[in-house]
Amino acid sequence: MSSFVEIPSPSVFKIENLFRDNNFIVPLYQRNYAWGKDEVSDFWNDLQAIIDGKHNSHFFGQVVTFKNEQGKQEVIDGQQRLTTSLIFMAAIRDISIKLGDKIKSFPSDINMEDEIGDTLRIIRRQVSKSIRGTKGEQPSLVVQQNVGDQNSSETLDNFFKRLTNTRLAENDYKTISEPKKNMLNAYVDITRSINTNIEHGKELGTRIDQLQIIFDSFMEHFYIVMISAPSRQDAFTIFETLNSRGKDLKASDIIKNHVMSLMNKDDLRNANQIWNQITRPLDNNSDRITRFIRTYWASRYRVVSEARLYREISDKISTVTEARKFLTDLSSLVDIYTVLESPISPKAHYNYFENKRLDQQLDILNRMHILLYYPVVLALKYRRFSESDMLTVVRKIISIFVRFRIIMNQGTNKLESGFSDVAHQIWSLNLSNSNAIINYMDDHLLPSDDQTKASFEVMSKEGGKRGSKKWTLVYLLAELYEAIYDDFDNDTLYQQVFSDDKYSLIQISSDNEIKDYATYFGNWTMLEKELTKNSFSSMDKLISALTKSKLNSNHKLATQLQENGWNVEKIKQRQFSFVSTAVLIW
Image (cartoon, rainbow, N blue to C red; front, side):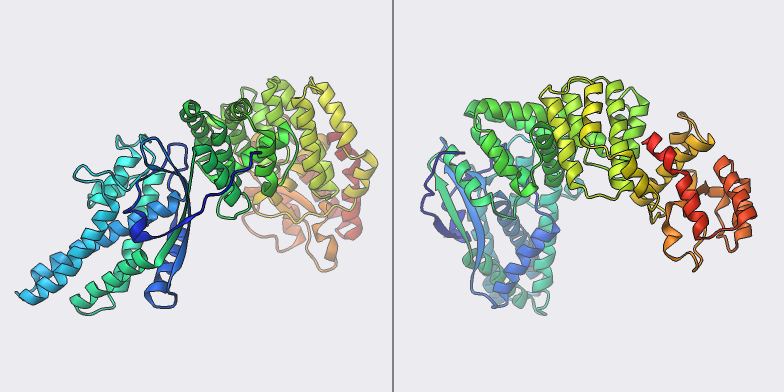
């Protein structure tokens, strides 16, 4: 946002006055309640410090609002704190009710019942005045209205109203809606913390006194600064000003705020629906949403760090038309992005492409934890390239990565910016067919044959039983064994090596005389898992297993071990024998 907005003078409220003097409403486009165990635990620890007398007051944060046409304070920033505050009060009220029930079970003691009962009644009355929402009153806080739940007919705002105004039924604890679950978990955790604290008192009266101390510590010693802007637009701008350099919010949260701030009032609901369509496949996870937006930006424009992402987007997107286009682009690309994250699971991802070879190549990339190419595929999708063309480009991407990163062990910065450049060229129609893309990548990203050969001769890999290190080494061996020994073909390599996961990595020797050459590529092979159930305590046992293998490459290796033994020179020779084929494959 380019216009300057003067931040109004903030008002400082104790919690006890904040809710009594204001009616808050969380608009539909704000994110749902998201506090988890860590945030609730921090909240309680801050309150515990007041209860224990370690601190006299606590700054609970800021709230940014503007007063809408109905006279309610529409919350732009701070809804997590406000929601948690009312959940805390509800927990206090429900505990006071249970303590009141215990008083009635004691032998008749009129003075005790009157005095202690009055304390509990005062607490409940204070809570009721702060929460409101019964007997025709306006509630002090209304969360997102009409937010549905596919597993329940009850909307989020009605659930929150029941949580804060009544005692929930047992069935409510089975809810699986994420924001409802977060609210319920916060209520349970806060209730447990309060009960643990008051149970140090052996007598009922002592426990009730402690409950009053806890309640007063929050209501009278927690402070919030509220900034009420003259308009929604100004409130959005103030929010960005206060949060763009902060650590509490993810880039995606601030970006959403910026995009919504550009919308006309009539566009807000539709824009929010599109945003939800974008974020739902990403599980409403702020980190995944941020990564997706960053990938889109790298595809459309250039690579920027997560720390710079909001500023870059806010500078580039400054009109309603640009904001709509941004949302439309994200909506059209989110499905393929989630497929790239997990190409074969769930089944819908595996069925996304008709070309199963494309699925297989993407899965191989995913197993090797290669992510930097995502912007290229997003650009291909946006420009509606055929799946056959996509497969051609993806195969070249694998070649570039194998040469640059796996064989030569170069850093990723050049690849990240390079793939972003390729994507931008596709997006901008400077590269309009697969041949042009391949030639461009050959010229700008593919290391030379001589560089690759020299690095391959001394390539060392750690291997492993699982994860990207395992799959990288297995992939290299499988492709070389197919090309040199005809051990696989295009139809069986992926199925046997990756889908069925039939092979284990085997280090041919780990003797002390091998030393630094133990992890050289020439000292590795892959062997059927049924032949590796027992460790190879001797070279003879390894040779026997290699002989039983169905792979021609292992038969060749077994003969070599029988006739010539194994040492550093043999490792070097075997590794060198793969060099010429490697540059042909990749």
